[in-house]
Each structure stands twice: as structure tokens, then as C-alpha cells.
Length: 344
Length: 277
Image (cartoon, rainbow over all chains, first blue to last red):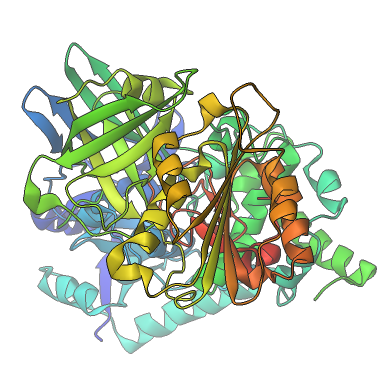
């Protein structure tokens, strides 16, 4: 596939061309919070940081969304009627996050209408990470600062320009249709490759996680969990900032014969999540709830998806008010299972 | 694109109170548009939806062999179930389904079936019993034994029907209550004890066991003593649920989703799941 070169001073023009056929989402800073939003005409994305505080999953899966409307004429579904969505400037970890969530929302049996309709004909242009943060650990979990999973085009920032490398045929087609986009030269490509190699080399060597799943399975009833979860406040900052957490609640609201059914991001960290009508709650303790989160990401999803349900973005590390670090947990779990000789 | 969250309109055909404390009501529903009617199997569930109030999962109590209605028995515990209890005949609500898997009828074809149940967990087992006893199916299965217990006679659901089945010779029905009361001439004692008294043979037999957790806990050892291996004991599990289709992420036990992989599981499968059921 052809590779392209985009001068940074031509970025606005590039995004405007995209905006002709796509609703373009990119990182923005609003009220001190960085997140993804649809760009206003003429607005440039905020690209001087690596990851947004809020994960980009809300582009395809809004945090709060009316899914059904009720009135005297019956029940109607809401429908996304905007242009196909293009995401610009997402990081490779988050692009992979889309893939992991999609495997849940679009499985063999059921397709989630609201996710699928926004994902239809969408384009993901990611920007690789030249200087991964200290909290980044994508290389622990099968990713990397220039991983292409989930991207249609991967961009490498060389300082003055982006080298655009189409990953999917769709990405290639869209890039080919952008006017005034230069072809990248061999020299440009070499420069990009050097940056990619340097970025990966700058990340500390990851531990081997081959035995992580079997260690966790073996430790399920071990007091180990009481220790690793003791300081957890159950605030759920980790799940709301996670690009692969997808759990939701459905609630109805109504007034005088009119009403709506709303879908809202929810979290396994809150006791109400599993509290049943009878009052019974199968996950009464915060230990059992944090254990659920970790087991889901590092054991259950290995069974259901064939890989960890974590992309190593590090948001849970940086957002935790009591400094729980999932990397320490991982290392601790493997070591505990080994020391106790329980690892399967 | 098909929207799996869109409820199908159904109308309340008939309602009756199922227990003397008025916590249980049984609803027969019919499709507003006949084309919407779906096939299902005993053990599957549906999401019942009252627009503006909410939606929740309920096991189907009717059998696919009973045409023209879908039956649900609802325990009044919260906002949605209370609103369901206030429904009147002719009211329209929404339904999504059928969801989940079903009792493994293909596995125990030609074999004996022991159904053990307590309280209002009889719902999907009523579906199974009616299905097995249907003239088109009855010849495909061996002996059918039904052991059913309730705290007292007034909490025994589908009682009229059970008393009819008691008189039939293609099913052995044992009804029990926790403590003796005047006018009760059937068995007395908890389900685990009564199961031991009856001691159904485990030879070529499968057990479907649904009831309160405490009943299940104490019945399992009895079944093991009788020689039923965990592979031949099935139950139907419950968890708080929202979507019913494996998306909302809350009804998992270990790596299994009750809504997708269940609700029907064998105890051989359950033993492999780390979390408590």
C-alpha cells in the first residue's frame, strides 16, 4: 500500500477534506478535561498530549444514550443519522480498544444496533506514540506504541509532518482520495521506522505474562485478593477511564405518558451492579468486585476473546485516587502463584 | 439493521393470582401482531418491558406445545414487577426473546426425568413438564417424576394443574409443604428430605433442579448419594440482568454469561466456575 506524507501546516485542510464525508472526531480539551469530540468547522485537534483522560469509546458508545422513545403512538428506536464517523488522533492502545469492545457488541449471535450503526463505514486514523508515558504498558499486553490493530491508517509524527501508513483497504482508499496529499519517499518511511523502533525500545522490557491467566484462576479463593484490593475505594475511576470496559445499565424515565429508555455506562465496581430484586448480592465486598474486574480482563476475556481485555493504556494507573497500579497487581499475582506453587 | 433492543408488542390475555399472599401473579400474553410470534424451548427466558418503567428477565412458564399464549409468573419485589402486578387484561407491554439456552431435552431423550423444585422456581420446569407430557413428545421420554415443595399450600404455584397431574399415570407427582397444616394430606418436609424419602432411581435418569439456593445446597448431596453424577443434574441460574444478550456485562459467573451461556447449566459445568453461584 502507498504511504503518504501530511505536512502539519496542512492538517486543517486534511481534516476539512475528511469532514466533507465524515463526522470527524479528534482529541479536544474542554473545561480542563481531555476527551474526544466532533471537531467544529475550523477547529484543530489538541495533539500535544498522548492519551485523553476520557477514553474514546464514547465516540461509538456514548456514555449516556437514549435508545428508545415511548409515547401514545408506541415505541420507537433512536437512530444515529449523522455522517459516517472518522476518528483522528486516537492512540494505538485506544484503537485496539475499539476492537475488543466490538467483539462483545457484535458477536456471532447478536449485534448491538447502537454500536454497529455508529461503527458502520467509520475510519480510524491513529497516531503512534513516539515517547510512551511511564504509566503506559501496551507492550505487556500484546500491543505497542505503533501497533496497527483497529486502525485504518497509522500516522507517525516526525515533528513537522505525519507519515500516513494505510492499514486497511478502506484507509488506503480514503487516503488516495484526499487531494494534495504527497506520497511518502523512502527517506520519509525510514525516518518513521526509526522513530517507531526508538519508541518501543524506550519502554521497559515487559514481564512474561504467559502464566497470568492460570495464576489468577488458581488464586481465585486465595487471601491474596484481600491484600491487593484492601485500599480500593470502589470509586470506579478505573472502569470509567478504561477503553475496553463496556458494561452498561438500562434505565427508563417517563412523565405523563411519554418516556425514554436510556443506556448508561455502568461499572462492576458499584455494589448495585449485581444487587438483585430479592436483596441478594453475589458480589457483596469490594474485594469481590475488584477481583471481578481483574479476572474479567486477564482471565475470562482470554477465554472468550483469546487475548487480554486490557490494552495497557495506563489510564487506570493514572486515575486511581489510591495509586493502585494494575502492573504491580499483575507481577504480584504471578509471583504469588509461583511462590505458593498453585499456578496451573 | 435489526435492533435487538426493540421490544415486540404483546397484550395481556389473562391474569391470575398465584399465591395467597398476593406476591405472585401469572400472566398469559398474546402477540399483538401474529407474525411476531416466536418459537422457543423450555428453560428459555424473555425480557418483559413496560415502556417508561423498565425491563427485566423472566423465565417462560408456558410450553412451546401450548399455542396462542406465553405464560410468565412474576414475583413482586421492585418497581418493574410491581408495575407488572398492576397490569390489567388487554394492556399492552413489550417483550424480547426467546433468550438463553434451554433444558437439554435432546440429551435425555429416551431417559427418565426427575424434576425437583421449590417455591416459585417451578415456572420454567412447568414449561418442561408440559412439553415432556405433550402427546407428541411423551413417547420420547421414560418415567417423569416431579417433586415440588412450598412453604405452605397457599404458596404452591400452579396448584390446580399439579392436582390434575397427580391423578395422571404418565407422571409421578410428589407435593410437599414445610410444616403440617390442617387439611393437607400430601407430604410434609423440606424438598431435600422428601427427595431422600422418595429416592428416585438414578438409572438412566436426569435431574432438573430449580429452587432457592438453600434447597439446592441440601438436595445436591442427596442426589449424589442416589448416584446422579453432576453431568446429569441441571439447574437454571439467575443473576441481575439488563440486556439479556451478553452485552451489558453484569450477569457473568466466571467467564460464563447467564444470559448467553445459560441460564441452564449442569453441575459439572458449574463446578468449573470459580465464582459462587
